[in-house]
Image 1: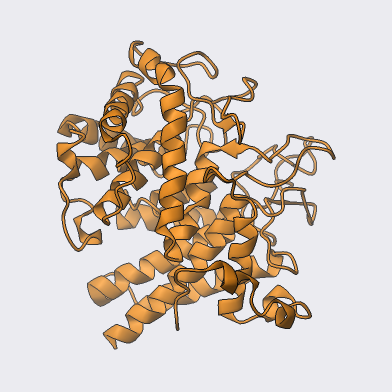
Image 2: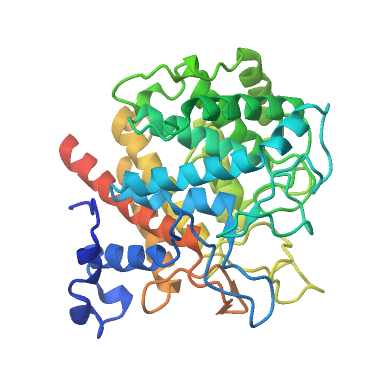
Length: 417
């Protein structure tokens, strides 16, 4: 099955007339990828960032046509999976610009012993104006450690793959990275609470600890991620990470798992511990997947956690009325295809690849069943109806990643046979 690589603008526009009379689900896999990618590209801004959606808030609720740092980093992931590394690098260099703009917050935070608040001067805000790059609000928790973990993990990963995302102003960026590590250790990321992926808390979140642990492990370069790369680039020379930081993070993560936090025995965000990071053991991964499948999977998506009030259809009776996120179907599909790749690499010792492939296909089909007729992934469904954030940038990206990941699994399986 051919993988869609190096999408070009003419491909995005070609054969449009032949597709206009068919729904998204009737298209070929190649056509689906092109359509889905085109929707994602419409959210991309000239500076390389992605607005979360094009919803401007005119029908109530928060406007989403702004930047969230995490959303940008995940939204641009699709570019790697279609071979557009230049676009991905541009997005991550924008994140570097934003971190540089607010570097004083990182250095101020590094001067404190630890941090428990949400919107003080020591915190990088999660939401940014897409043109001015100014912070937009101080109304909710911005102390989100997973943002730093994702940034450290993916920049290290790109460099190891031969794409030097920090080549511009390299010395300044290296200093920024060292300040970031100092900040993380000063606020005691492995023992102090944050607001997590969903900007709620403060609590200690296993998804946050795992994200930072993955980022530090990537740069520590102790061999944990060596299997992923054809050549070993010694990036630890540019950003030395003490072994003690990694050991402390590992101990903290193991002590909290398989819970997400004290208040949440399971959470959709925990899938990040498997993809993109795979920073946990196989047994922990299967426990997390099992918890999510048994307790969080619904008809239109995966709820974030039991009792979630965000877009809840009955806040007086929140359990059973939580918003359902199609993003969760994409994430589960990706996770299962990752397990299939591992099974192919290690043999039947890990498990039959076909079992993981089938589960990945099932969740991808579930996702496509709740996408719009023209191929967009909504943020969520409440009471069977989607909200206004259609498409949601990082959910749209995850669909492309899920589809491409499964394509690659089939290629690896064919090569093995």
